[in-house]
Image (cartoon, rainbow, N blue to C red):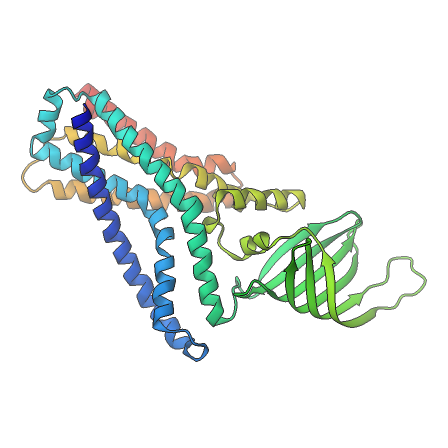
Length: 368
């Protein structure tokens, strides 16, 4: 069995590696073609071709994380189909590789892919993606979402704040800050605008070029709006740099721990966290889909192939992998719109494909 496992492991890993390399080369080419336009657009600020290549290279771990389950499915289907076509798998069966041992062997291999996918998605990809965004922001001048930037909320003892951050620069400073302060009754107390801000280590923001407007409280003797211009202002708060980055970056590019901390911050400030909870559970369940893919590929070893028919089965594996990727994204949007349970939304695509794979295994392998 050690020899059989070594043979299957070697064939599957080499095949999955070849498929992954092909997909990554394709994505690298598409990203590079798109990034060449940014070179001409930001040439005046010093954005050169070497920076575009570095940016595209740093995006590879994110693509790798998305492609691993699909590559595992296509690579395993190719190996199982080729072994069945050449009667090599028949020899393995006569050597003692029964269906349950074959399933156990592929599950062990799939567990290795699970660990690798989790490591890439939770450690390598977030760091590389953030470095890529900061590299590009150094020459484009900003990192923002939409036209209004990011909105955050801070709840303190006697008041609560709605914070709007326009941009995050490459050096970690903030631009275009607006802070609306409300009392516990929900009445507007003050509005603070600042051109730039830096985040101090002592849980505070240091503003520069501040415009502050104080509104009179209800029932006050003087109903007069007071305006002031300050060169600098220190604002104590619990909004960290990671939370600002989380609001500006895509949630799927964040690590599991950052997502969990940001969800806790949103819930503590009575904000909806449905989108980030779905992404958190997708981070948990997505690596496990590698197990589903190897189980889905096992029945191909028990099919009877004619000459040249292996290409059609591999093409079917490609379509199945693409459909899983699309279904995983579509269910994320549907769950967010329909307010489904986050863990159920993230686990549903994997459950559907698990049922399909186990049904195919039971019908083709055990029954026939």
